[in-house]
Image (tube, rainbow, N blue to C red):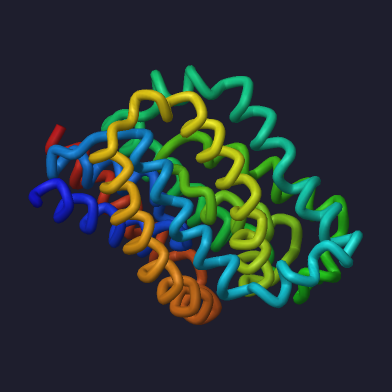
Length: 253
């Protein structure tokens, strides 16, 4: 029963942080460490719940996607760099980067980068709709997404920053970030589960199911709320949160 409660806590953590630029993986690692429930496979698997929330929320886009050749190409361009790098460095990432200290440093570095982009990058968006994104802009977002392979950097934070650099507005950057998260997270979680599925017990699968359901519900609510907050607040509050959290955690190390 205690493990179920911990799975619920981690499901809430995942749902709340997957779409905020504060790193869901980083928070899962930190929270998992605090509540003594550390499982990289569990953390990765329950992210599918939050990703399913994207599919449900943007179902009209995904249902029509097979008929949108340009959008399909944009998604392919944006996800290819991270997929290739993740495939080549999968073992090294899990071995060297899934740790408390590395997550803290990623939170700090990512927060500083977000502030630099927020205050030093001239905000002159030229693109306000996903269908107007160019292949070059998609490539910039794709390269930026590679930073998210470092747990704690944040996939949404990396891609939103990439979108702003590519001159997408905040809302379009966020929506494109959410949409390209679907194939890349399915690929990442699927690859991880294929490699570790034989090690999972029935109890593990049950806990993953609980975390999956909770992250889906919380993630759905978080998406709608976050876009409104991002348009209003921009990146600065999330960057400051990351830096403050990293500083507190470093003092405790």
